[in-house]
Image 1 (tube, rainbow, N blue to C red):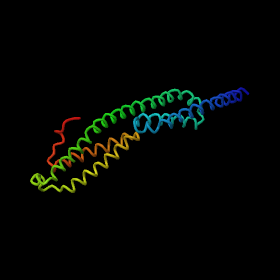
Image 2: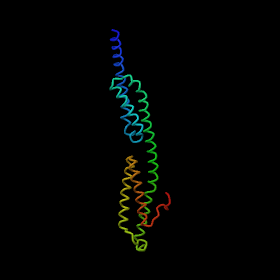
Image 3: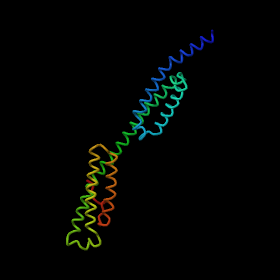
Image 4: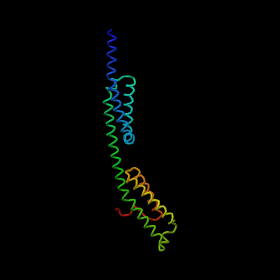
Length: 194
């Protein structure tokens, strides 16, 4: 009789912890799912750690060890909240760096395009035939037109808030313009800073 009473009390104890364990797991899962997009990009190691801890809690739940879930849930919940914070901080830092890069590129790239256009205009004059010797001015002009198109795309990405794409396109364009300037005998680094 006494063994039966102990078994019933253990069953009641386990059953009474099942619902809190289930709720705790659900709450932690919701936080991990909601933060996983930014966390995967900005705090991947921390995301893997939280997912691993959550997996161990889920395994305890599946093994009907609800007491272990209830006992371990606060630590994992704290780690999940830390994940949100870490991802937000890393994202803010990355966004700030992209904004700073864009500011520099937005000041530099248009000046480079203007300088190249002026150089092409000069080289297209009859009085500059010697300077233009060996330079395919038509190809250089088409390449500059392509640069103008790429700059429009970079600005559109910036306007829609897609800073990674805007900075990437502007950086590629800056590099391409520097390459274009060489055969035109134009030193873009010597341009006055605006």
